[in-house]
Image 1 (cartoon, chains in turn red, cyan):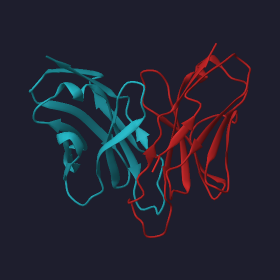
Image 2 (cartoon, helix red, strand yellow):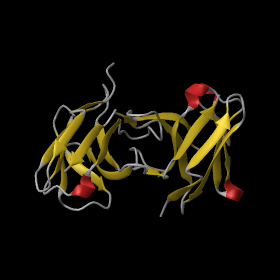
Image 3 (cartoon, helix red, strand yellow):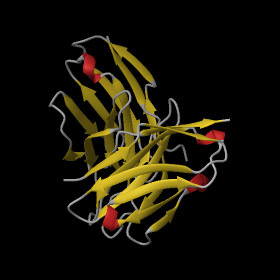
Image 4 (cartoon, chains in turn orange, cyan):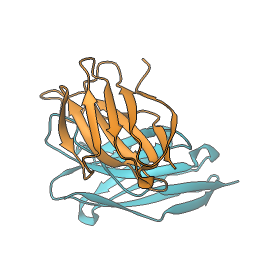
Length: 117
Length: 116
């Protein structure tokens, strides 16, 4: 089991550009959550995707959007990049199901380090 | 609303000494609580989680945490620090009562350094 994988590992963009980050969930998982971790801070929840729809969203502007594919993999898109978007972007996968309770732990990937110049 | 506060952004202990990382939470509903560890240039690894089954939770690498509702605390401890414990530690909270994994709210982190 490869666990949660993310690509690319590192990315450098300039202000105003657009970026797409990718995430493949752990085998058997159907739910993907994205988090932004700025330098020296804890991760902040961006949004969560399940059944190809955005299910929950944190306090992030519409410049941040996402997508989930039928194979459960997911993309995070950020438009009109700002310097403040420089961060480590973490993807976490889990399994949604009635009656699972909290045996639906989120497993985190290694992250994509985005630098905006 | 839910939140966590980690007391101390940096903790330094000697190898073999007790590790104590402090976390207080705020939640309007019974919470699930977590401790994660992050090594340099890596993602997050779950150390342990509280899901109301037992107030003393044992995790990986010899860590444990105790849920104290009266103090709204969930402090992380390890009896004897090892050099390999040097990392960033995050306390986190999420909601209960959902069939799906709810969003996790993280604290700002505590960097643990180990002195030889």
